[in-house]
Image (cartoon, rainbow, N blue to C red; front, side):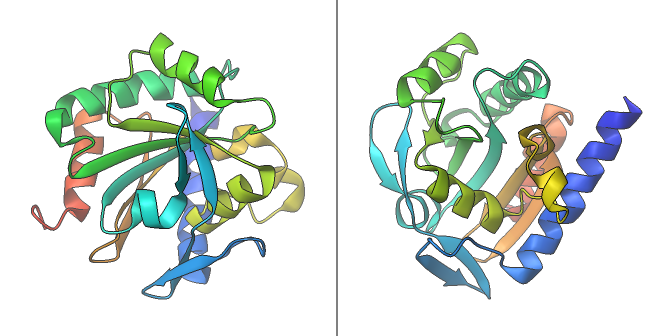
Length: 199
């Protein structure tokens, strides 16, 4: 348990630092919001659609985003199950004015079909998208959202980038982060905190 808390705290610090610096991979074509650069790279959804990350998924929206991978035997299944409860608590707002996205850390392995099977296995409802793409595009998003460790050796470990949820409101450029294993009610409160309607 202490190791998990340490990991989550470390990821939170790295992510907040990334928001300040706007770190992003060179391959991305970014959109700039309040000094933050969000890549508009192409990704694939688990439903088979092709989307551009910023203009189709983030622009003008309240979003909750985490990193995961389908064959994870550690935190990912627990995290996904917890976020299913968050989705249920938010009800019909998901996919309407609040959007949930899970992005694979292993795009070479996780095809849209793999992610669709993962979503079905965990009882994910419509309005929550699972995303994959080229390694370069996924890395651009990961770095821009702050899911990285400043130590390159540690950063190579994909397990170090799960466990946190990036929460944001693009319209008012308000962003935060919450542990993905926090109580679902607490996560909902964090999402509503960045929402213009609740702010």
